[in-house]
Length: 115
Image: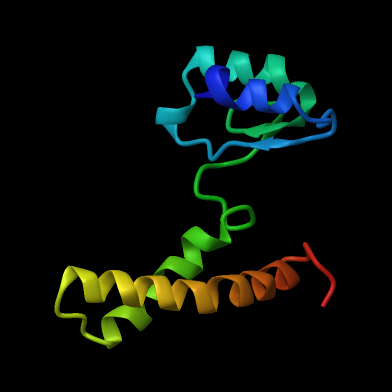
C-alpha cells in the first residue's frame, strides 16, 4: 500500500513538508517498512523506530481511538438495535452527528486548535 498508493499520491502533490505518523504497533514496524518510511519522510516520521519516537496507543495523536469510538458505541447500544441494519443505521447517524463536533473539542483540549 505504501509503495503502490501512498508514495505515488504524494509524488502527485506538493507535500515536501508532510509529516507521517505511525502508531508504533509491532505489526506495523517491520524493518523494511521503517526503512521505507525513513527514506520517504526523513526526519518528518513520527514512529516507534523513527526520528521522532512516539509510543503505540498514544493519547495525543489518536484521541478517536481513546474516546470517540467508546462514546459512539455507548450511544448506539443505548438504543438497543435489534437487527444488523438497525445497528448500522444508528452507528452512521451517531457518528455523523458526533465525531466532527467532539473531535474539534478534543483538538482544542490538547492544543491543536484555538478555542
